[in-house]
Amino acid sequence: MAKDSIYDFLRSLMLPLAEIDKALPKQGVIVDLGCGEGVIAKYLARRKTRKVIGVDNSQKRLQNSTQTNLTFVLGDIRSYRLKALDAIVISDVLHHLSYKDQKKLLVKIASNLKKGGIFVIKEIDAGEFIRSRLSRIWDFAFYPKDKIYYQHSNNLGNFLRSLGFNLKIARASRVFPGSTTLYICQKL
Ligand SMILES: C[S@@+](CC[C@H](N)C(=O)[O-])C[C@H]1O[C@@H](n2cnc3c(N)ncnc32)[C@H](O)[C@@H]1O
Image 1 (tube, rainbow, N blue to C red):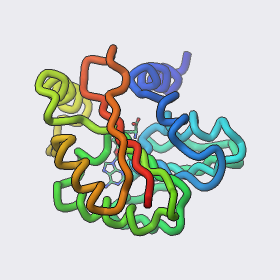
Image 2 (image 1 turned 180 degrees about the vertical axis):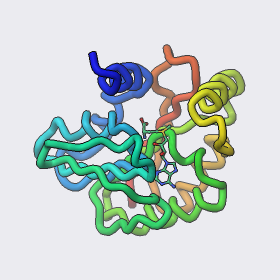
Image 3 (image 1 turned 90 degrees about the vertical axis):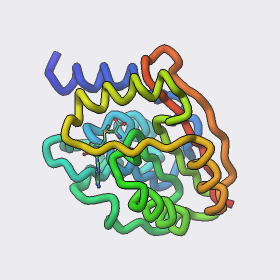
């Protein structure tokens, strides 16, 4: 098995892929912000009625796509232009941005999703005492130089509601030793 496929396989065990897929529309344009190696984007693009765009600022992580409904773009999600989207996913990325940049990005997302559009966030919940500390070990192992900014799910949830999202918070992938909180948001 190639190194990329091994990574994809291991990452897919950590991610609540089926839950993310189920929460998202079956067709339309979906942007995966901070897609990394594209494990989520590739899973979502298995449904050909979707057009999936993965954006990441790491050339090293970005992969080539041979699928017509899947594109990977090199870019910084803080300045990447979003417009009239059906759905957006952001998984394990927010905590790599400063609290100020997280807020700015969430405001931008809220104003660029179509009415009724779906926004899925997978994040570490600082309120999960043990799991968030386990996640911090993973982040240190994979991103030793990054400053990390976890949020409490109550604070993030309240902020999302203030931006006009209807919100469901779920704790997925209980087997994984880390915090895997899923925010399924619908633009009102
Ligand atoms: C933990 S990985 C998550 C990858 C993928 N979303 C997943 O769940 O498998 C975090 C990703 O965010 C990307 N990232 C961090 N800050 C970014 C930024 N400002 N613009 C674009 N990508 C960013 C990193 O390059 C990295 O690929």
